[in-house]
Length: 485
Ligand code: ADP
Image (cartoon, rainbow, N blue to C red; front, side, top):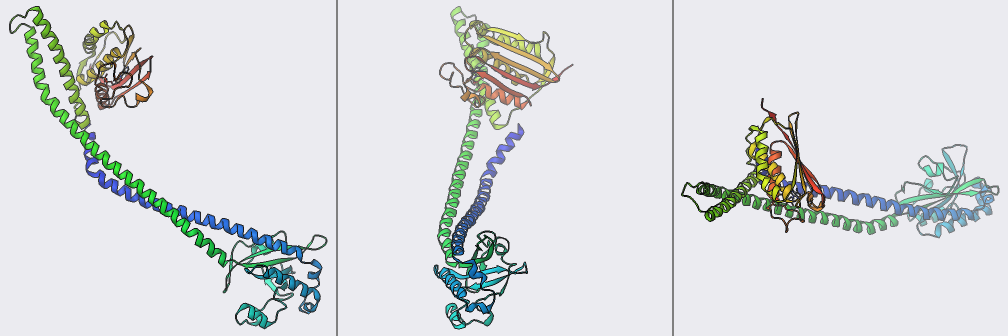
């Protein structure tokens, strides 16, 4: 219990700082998460668009491949063959393919060689162009070795995996974009088939994708930045909300504590005069102040009963405030359970008789003396029995089961009463909580079970219940105790 008190003090002094630190950490995590999500989204969308682009380029090159005649290709083996009409025809076809789209930079045909790591050019769209024409097209001066390749010129294919592994089998494109001093390009290839469906060569095109990539970036980036901003804004607003509700919780906890303190002070101040009134009425009834007539004695008895009720309520309120403030003090003393239960049965006997309740006691005939806090244990068991009688209709049954074994007292109180509705079950041990089915029909204050829970758990015991509306309720207690020999 002492621990509870310390906890509550710690919470009050350090919570705002902790909440602030937690808020900053959460915001940083949210920002990192939002950044990562946005980045992944960006990469994913970019890949998706690149895939679409590749599909389109592969479709273009596949169509182009169907236009080239395998016999024309076979006719061109060396530079000497460039004079042939087939060379002119192929050059024209390659130029048409290249010029069909301003982004196609190169169009060329390659065939296999003896060397598995190299292919040989058949022709390029510019092979028949003169040095000057090629320079004019490139817009810069070109060295001899930068001119368009001709028949038999080798091409190392190590850096072009799709060309090496796929191009002679099916239309394909390189995964990686190629960069040269002018632009970023994507290469795509398609096989060219002979009459008997053998692959005689591949046609390739290199497409400039700079524009496309720039367009992707310029449309995607603002969109993704907007998403990033939205996620961050949402995180920030949630944190503000959490912080605000955290502050409110602290404020309400503080208010609740102050109220408990006040309640404790008031109850404490009330306890003394009420006890005095009780004793005065007692001596009045005993005739210490002169003999009372029958009417006066009846009045004094009613007043005494009211004073007892009031004293019980005040002591209950004191217990509630002790539990709240973590100030419960347990005082285990040798307790003769025989007289302990006898006293409890005497207290509830009048109501049991009045309501014609069948009270069943399943307990050993003689009970030991054990070390327990009498006041709290009695308060708990008496409360469970009083409730069972109170919430059970006339003529019902209340059963008390009691066993003591291996240093544990097990006690259950079962009734055939109104039961506790599902929606109330998890709040029933709360302070001043009363179930909806009895709130307006049976009198009570909702302190009893709160104190009972504090009393049992404060002695390292357990308390719980099962209940079904209209059928009844059973409360269970397990309380560690020591037998006194
Ligand atoms: P009260 O003074 O209202 O009886 P308690 O704290 O003892 O206060 O009980 C809290 C609430 O638990 C009761 O108002 C009632 O709704 C419910 N309750 C407790 N015991 C029983 C029972 N044996 N049968 C049905 N409801 C019960």
